[in-house]
Image 1 (cartoon, rainbow, N blue to C red):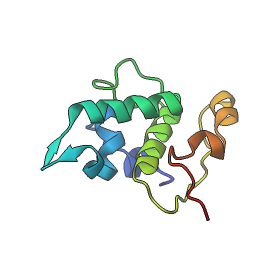
Image 2: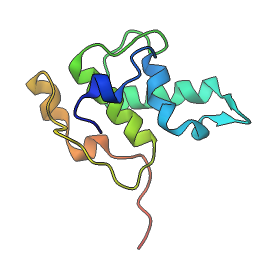
Image 3: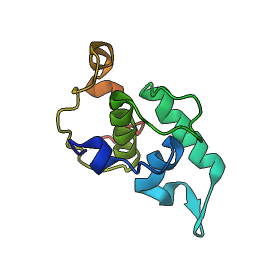
Image 4: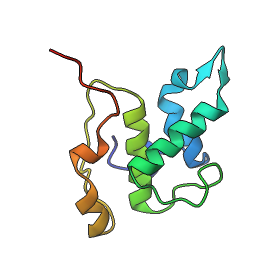
Length: 115
C-alpha cells in the first residue's frame, strides 16, 4: 500500500465502487463483463468492514484522507495478495479512526487454512 494514497493508490476519476475491485477484476467479472451486483456487494462489504464514510458508493469519490486510505486498503485486501506491506497504516487525520484501525480490523475475510 503506497504512502501517497491519493497520487499512487487511488484512481481519482473513479468512484469508491470503481476503485475497490479494480485490483482483482476477475473476481467480479465473467467473460470480460463486470457483474454489477457482485461489484456492489464487494464494495458494500468493504465500506462496512472498514467504516468508509460515503453518501453513495456508486457516485462518491473518496475525498477525506482517512477515507482515501481505507479505500486503498480495501483495494489491497480485495486483491488477495499473499503479503500486504503497509507504509504508516495508522497515519490518518484523526485519533478516532487511528484507534479503530488494528490489524484484525483489516483482516481478509478468508478463513485460515489448516496447517
